Image 1 (cartoon, rainbow over the protein chains, first blue to last red):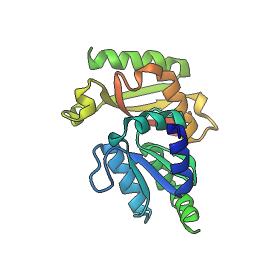
Image 2 (spheres, rainbow over the protein chains, first blue to last red):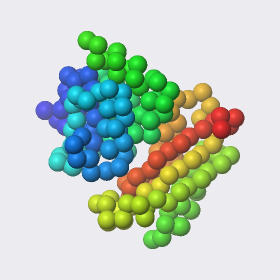
Image 3 (tube, each protein chain N blue to C red):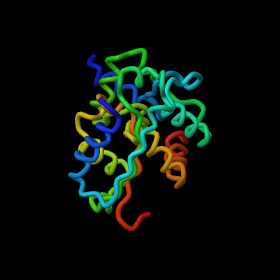
Image 4 (cartoon, rainbow over the protein chains, first blue to last red):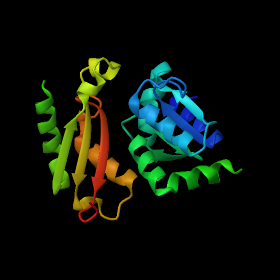
Length: 106
Length: 90
């Protein structure tokens, strides 16, 4: 299984996936900490998180997968949503809450 | 390399987006000691206004910024917070 296949499987078998530096309990980057805080503000505590600091192949692979040069990266139902700036914008507009609720309703 | 050089390079690259305004804040000092800061890349906050963003969602706007910055991402720039507006949105 290639790294791209592993990432595809991760993002398609979990409704909400966050690639981040550190863990939700101990984020090791301010942007990743923001991403976790936004998900929690949306009422989402239980999401699949991947600590890219523990796996350099995933860290580089996920940048290729989304064609996006930075971490964190949020995926909902397999679709790349964005990084922490976009998460904040979508949270402020209420769009993120709607996407998350729809994804987690099943 | 200095932060001023990096900002100048960012402005050069971003010129391809024909921006009406570019503001770059160097927040590297806030992240001193952070692993990425030790590796030499800076933390920046970018606000940019460009007609090329009109009609695009945030994801597409950020992609245009990343494309314009090219190889600066991950080398001179370790982390970048982006606010991208079309003219008239501010």
